[in-house]
View 1 (spheres, rainbow, N blue to C red):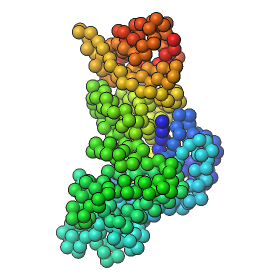
View 2 (view 1 turned 90 degrees about the horizontal axis):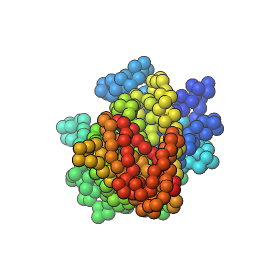
View 3 (view 1 turned 135 degrees about the vertical axis):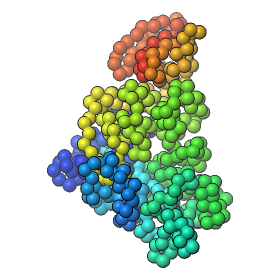
View 4 (view 1 turned 60 degrees about the vertical axis):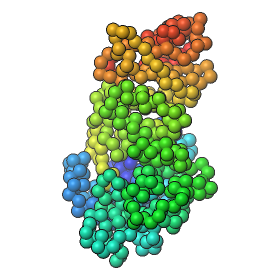
Length: 483
């Protein structure tokens, strides 16, 4: 199972530089720091934001009062030096010199590989910076406009070198002011995307594709209509991904995906897609909603990315109660599919930092939470190696709190694991019939993996009527079972 740790590269290197009293780049990160990154239970590191940021995009951002206000909200002592520009306004897919350049990235990748970790990097398929070389070298790769378009809707178009281009956008929000829209229907753009991704594949083991669904034929046609020209017979990703994999067969493709298009993107070649629907249910809804989501086909679930945080979402510590945040973390850590942990999540950071900034505010570590995550992420490694099954919880006519229980099992040969979570703010009781019928006639020991508390139960009872559960609000069992 893929377990990704997202690191804000620019901020991380800045903090390392301060800690070590010298400028630290990707090429000279101390070995003990790489040892910290290679924490047990993580096998993939996402170095977010390594590519050259756009000076033109930064200039636009500095004139945006709304953005500047969000910067000051996150970093009250903001200075101009703290604003680096957006890592998703890419001027060129070359590692920024301030981070150590391509040589620094190669050294970082080697350090990760020596510790058994893969490296993934960003790819932004929908748009480029207004000073990207393609605006002059390959203008047909972009969505064009006319002087009349610019006069009528200056917020949606821009002039660059005497040409009018559409600003990047998705269909549900106003255009992004600092980027230029690529044309997913253009043959030259598709060929250029293959080359760009292959070049990333020379430097990394995977790519996280930003807003991947925007390039799908149906979505792109609804967004741009006739401006993009006729839709090709073949969709964007089925064209691009096999051609990239011809050069890099093992390259991991991860899609940032929304609007319930995860299944479609999986079918178009992605290894994993964001599970935003689970995130929303864990944060805003109840156990019944989460359980319904987990009833989906297992092959589909195995290719989702479960998360409670990433750089686009609010911090879990600021959004959820302490109990709910931990219960949700247990769920995310023990479900099938990939897992994404966000830098600072383990320490209980509460400020979601805009990606434009190179510095974040000082926040005290939550030592208890840090200890919890350290044990959880390590402990679940063997748990998720087998076959997963969603379990049914039962109750009594005068006590229906079992509806607040979530339960599933993992089976690996003779290894059995059980997860039961009370995903509610009230105590819950119920029974969980276990799926292992060979427990009949056996005496069993169930051990809490995070606390080592142990329970003796008879196998006949565990199978029918089931393991008796009485959990306080937001509490859980994470158990191994041995006969």
